[in-house]
Image 1: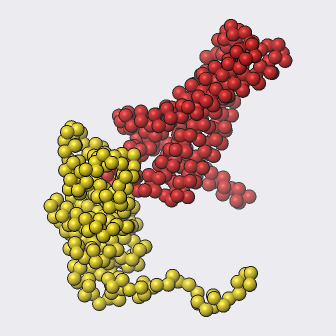
Image 2 (image 1 turned 90 degrees about the horizontal axis):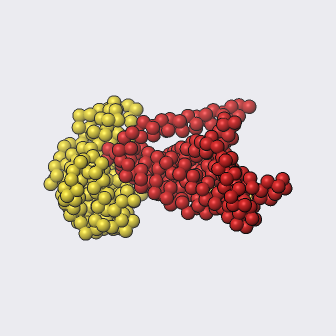
Image 3 (image 1 turned 135 degrees about the vertical axis):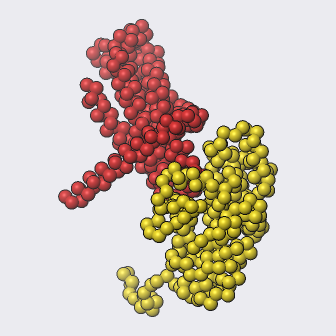
Length: 252
Length: 244
């Protein structure tokens, strides 16, 4: 019982540390926004370089949705609804969630190990000695780059996913193209898209925060950087799925 | 301890005796829990972040491994403090960076990436970066570790030359007794977190203390023991192991 209580306290302490770190990031964000070139560079590093994996995954997820959806809907004779089913699934759930998970694996790990290695090789201390705040110069641009990238990547994921579902449903299984698109247009409400946008923004903040936090506070050794990278993926995955449940419940 | 203006002061001592901690205290990377530290009239114990950053603009520090920013070229590394702190036109930045690189003999390496440099070159670039803002105080953390004799000689001469031509106050932390004795004006020897001796290199050599003799002479055993504290050797050798 005592152990459980102590574990809970440790967990709360960790959460508090995250919140404090986020506060620190937000405080220096206005100053960091003046150096927009740094943020653009990070959007390229985290976002643009994740495009291929996001687009490929989106295509396959969409194709799977097309197959499974068609099989299921065919039983009720409503395969024309494949468009709306796939689109809602992608926009509300799969787009934001899978994108966030892939982002954590592709860009989050890169961010964490980069920051961890910078710490291990004294680059962060060197900046501090040059009177340059590493939070402002290094951490915030990476954080903002991730925050901006994730919603955009999620949108691209959903778009490609819908195309993948169409590829299977319409081209392969012979669902009528007109009803596929018209049902989708009629069935997807603005609130569905809004839910997807809110989710992907929140996941973007969570994944980027976890990556830069783990990297910035990594133990400056080879093992420490490795641990930070692992923790980034594991924590991000759990947090994203947990937040997804909370947000889905909140939007009902 | 005091570090006189315009001189080179060396801090020596066995590993783990608090030399790096001392540097961290002087530069404000760590806070002292007792005593007082004055750097150029600022009390480092009470200085807030803004004061600390203002003071650090007047300091340069050479890290043990150079600590160059790996995603920037040599030129951009040296230009980094100028770009962050000043609004100078590109032409002037170029001139300043090239002068500093020329001073360390690496103007030709301006376009290389830090990963393409040897250990000695790496540290010379870091030195150019440390002096690019024309600091008043220059701090070297173990500048000779892992260098070949030629690079070591180059760094040694640079420390002296920069100190004299730029009118710096230099603080050098090092183990290398013979090397540092040739450039330092004043030497402190630390052991077990305390200052055991201080003075000119000549005075240190003549110091009768056992600790100083051991360190200066490089003797394996003495007040700093060769053996890590352990139980009785024979008892441990003859003891039955778990699986014996």
